Length: 205
Image 1 (cartoon, rainbow, N blue to C red):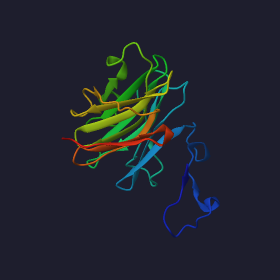
Image 2 (cartoon, rainbow, N blue to C red):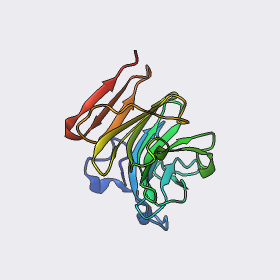
Image 3 (cartoon, helix red, strand yellow):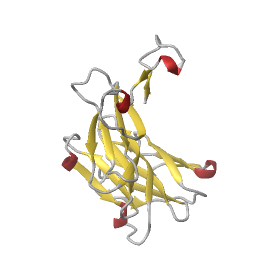
Image 4 (cartoon, helix red, strand yellow):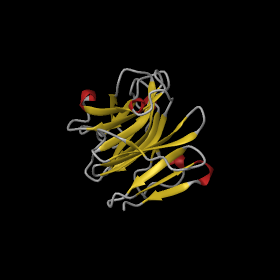
């Protein structure tokens, strides 16, 4: 990770802070696959295919925003590929359990620093015989949207929750390829994007 504090720091990345854990005494290297800023603080997610999924959360005692706390989600091998923070500070992450080849969605509860206090949704509940990946997530209020793919065919996948991630409904559009990004608006409408330049929007009736 490279960190540019503000406009007083030049545009040359060589003058930025090397905020990598392995360069700053963290004792272990981590792979951050997605990063969000909220309220001047950083939230990240990641891990590698051979490690349990990781969350990177703001550390209240740290002097720099990039000095995050690491929270391990689950004991399976996998990655979290997408993260979003809603206006109230709630966190949603999505990725895959590589042991089962199923997409996973996690929603923070009262204490995000406690791995046991994350609500998990296994996409295999909806598609028990299919391999699935969650590539991106977005949230606003109780609505959560998760996008991804069926990796064997690269067909798109779009799931929507209106109860804060307890349950999800399949709302996959007729898109030509996998979906990877989304945004939810305060009205509940959302936009998704994916392969072959696909962009689609849903507006509640």
